[in-house]
Picture 1: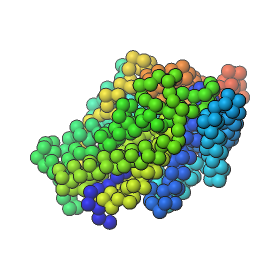
Picture 2: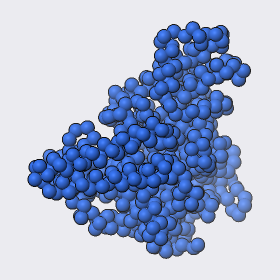
Picture 3: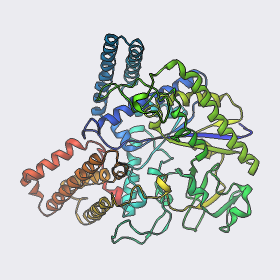
Picture 4: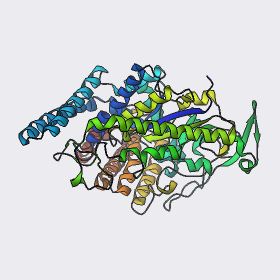
Amino acid sequence: MSHPLGSFCLVLHGHLPYVLNHGVWPHGEDWLYEAAAETYLPILAMVDECVFFDATPKITMGLTPVLLEQLTHPHFKEGFEHYLDDRIERARSDRAEFERLGNGHMAFLATRWEQWFSQRLEQFQQMGRDIPGAFAERAKRGLVEILTSNATHGYMPLLLEDASIRGQIRAGLASSQRILGFRPKGMWLPECAYRPTGPWTPPIVWAGSDRRVGIEHLVADEGITHFFVENHLIEEARSEYVRNGDDWHKVDWDEAQKYPARGWRDVHEPHGVNSDGNGPMRCSAFARDPRVCEQVWSGSIGYPAAGEYLEFHKKWGERRGLRYWKVTGNKVDLGDKHLYYPDDLPGRLHEHAHHFVNSVKDQLCAYRDKTGRPGVVTACFDAELFGHWWFEGPQFLRDVLLAMNADPEIDVCTTAEYLERHPPDKTVAMPEGSWGEEGDHRVWTNDQVDWMWQIEYRCEATFGKLTYNLPWREDEQVRQMLEKCGRELLLMQASDWPFVIRRGQAVDYGIKRFMQHVARFECLADIAEKLAEDSAYLNRLSEVEKFEVQDADIHDIIFPEINLNWWNV
């Protein structure tokens, strides 16, 4: 199908760290329950509603392996139903209290909450309590493309060894394939963090390789065809190769300046990536369109800041309180917020959805005028923004996708579909960076968290030594203990722990969780070494050792099938 302007790809990144059996409230399983109720189920409902209206709601949905593992586990399914029952009962209790206070409008809002959570419970049960399966079913129908990621969202550019990066990628792909029933071709790089081939210095003083392989090579080796980066990585890239017909040709680094109409270094086309200068593309990189995305995520001009939308921070009651107020104004104190009025929303949502669609068309028009080529707007967001942080977000996405489906000038597609129709004809070498603060690694390496890298690097080195030296291929006891070590290594490598510490959001929880996985790793590694020397040692474990093994088995209940070959380079 020919479209005068170009394409639109909506990319949502769904991720939460591993929290099952590690606390509930305020930090822990409630994070997962809230995201499932307020984001994942509403997004699925939004997709179905678009289909009901005879539209094709193409979305590219990242579901990280650690998220998939949790959503699939029976512990989550049981806990989530209890959570929804609690929400329903809380709404009923609130309504009774508001009626006693004579506040009819708040009683009306409480009834809406009761109905809303009851609908989520019914939706969850109708899909067989299988959220990943529901996404996979829609993927098989061509409505959704599902992305994989690292197993636990490990921050690849700062890991010490390429073997650890390969372990994260391979473990993640294994989980995605086992749970979804297929192997995704697209990947969300954790935190959009990328490092090219070349010299590398660890963030702390540590002996390590001074030359590392580019991330694109590590993911392409596992069959990944495309990933996503922040706009500045494409805009600051170096031209390397160009394709004319079926042949690739090496070009000068200033090719982008010579031929701007080719679309070099523009976020409105994916680029092939190869940072070693020795050949054409290994993978394709889509860059986030900052101007379009700013319309949603900006705290000052973003749509969620509009006064009519539900206020996130103000709740009735303490633990698990429900929300009854609207934003009112982004500079209004919580005590001055006005009550929420749902009837005010349809017009505001219509206004914002059409403004967003027009912003996309403006970008596509500008790109066509500049190059004469059809482009693509890639809008990347954290999935949890829609529904959890911005309650009306899924309704906004519904209105955007319905409007775009009715517009013949925009081709709404997944990123895999776009690549199939428009394979990149340019290869670039990108600089290092992420989508974090200032576009670099400072959120994940700084004075507050660099002590964590000191410990993590030691654990990486220990694990590499043990998997190289110990006879795990012949000794089942050693293998099983090293598999438990591998699980703890993956869990300690999550980018979430330094993130929450740096952001001051859950400092105590982040430190506690990281150190728990470190302690378990060290104990299990020590036992593995003793088992290699004496196979009967398992019968002589100390009480502390028994407790650590049992504690790991009780608390860390994901990634049931660890393969030590994942860490082989």
